[in-house]
Length: 326
Length: 188
Image (tube, helix red, strand yellow):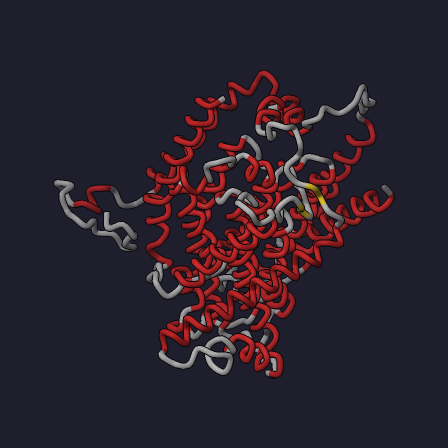
């Protein structure tokens, strides 16, 4: 173990990331907030374009901000015998999970939490989303919301294991579960290039835990909005922000895991991390309208009979390469 | 260091109270997630013991397990599948006696065991040290038993399944797609 740790250190023996004071966590959350706004505006523009309406500030681009203002003034809807505690915990949990995810993502040289098992930490936080989304569905004491919660868990059972094994591939290649080490291990060739299956499955997993695009049936119109059927006002705003925040956190985590971290010409490391994050985030937002919904009742088989074996073969190849290299 | 000590004890308290909540509340969802809070507190405590991997994996596995357990609890427990308020306790006297007895035995164990004093310093990678201390020379045995256990689970499910491949694919196993009550996603 000690040997593999040493071999994954950069040649000059300098640790790849510096831990900054915990107070910078506020800065990280601010960056996450900015990414959320960018993603929401982009989605608004794409929405307006597909609907053929105006794209400007008065139209698509301004839609998310207008929607936020509307929700902040909206009176909170109440339901009979709601489990308010669990409902609120669920609604607020998505943002918290996303913030805890980005805490281990290095922004160039700096990171807030240089956890030695950062990859597993990210995984634990995305599992937290299972609980949070189901609780949001449960809390309202509403049939449609609960059906949505079950739909999400059905999707979760399908996407989570492939996602876990997709995260394993970069960790094997880097010989470390530390996010900074994984980023530093990609000198020259990005992991996305030589482990494309893991990268693709990872992106699908990000869409999964953000209840996004193909995984949106948990919020489907056929069940009156599903998990968020009874969410209103600030609660709904928080839930939607949480989805975008998870999407942004997933995009940010893809950068050190698959896209070489802060590596790139001319610009400093932090700028490259942000640029790559924005690129992945835009791809995810754009893909929302391009991919068909995955049915919760049939996705399980797709996940376990197609994605899981594919990503396991990917892991095997990566492991063989890692052994052959050492 | 005082802050860390206080945080550790507070987490311990949260873990115990989270466990106790399970028997107090009248909702399957609250009971399940009370238990989840308890497990997460324990996971963070393990994190504070520098066992990062074990701590994070406890959080990961337990939250996932509780999310799935909530589904089963709501489906199968109680007269009206746990969507309504229901008591979380039964056989109170026996349970109370068993709980008190178990507590006394465990507490006596803690107090009576001759705990070893620390010799030398902790190893740099305490997770590896813990694994070797727990498994030691049994590692090979455990590595062999694991696939056997998985095979047993799979075999158990296969034996318990009421429908066989002949029900799915017909007597000559040639029916495509298979006749399933719940069709899958890849058209087998």
